[in-house]
Length: 127
Image (spheres, rainbow, N blue to C red):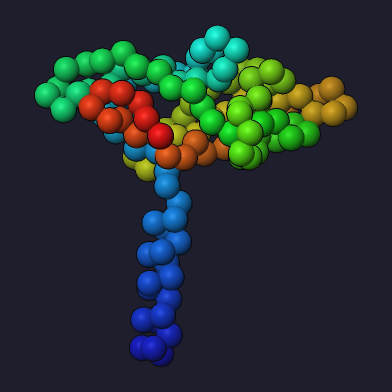
């Protein structure tokens, strides 16, 4: 039994480390979904290392609407072209994008996806 536990713990640590949730929500305020030109983005007020507030924004990478469901892919984000009521929800470990997205039959589906890898780098949102 001891051997089994010692093998499981490192696997759990590795799988948790592999999931790189966003952390900017812990040092940024007033963040929201925004259109940055034709791109989907996040706008926020983030603290710098000396405690000053800085307005910043970042383009959201690689999220698309696949048959009414938000999915992660390697392409530039395109979900904003077929989804509405787009918003952000957060907790200490993650930020979730929520939206109502058009399915092939024309109906809208409530869907969400975690946004990974965005952090606050001295007052600037960064991947």
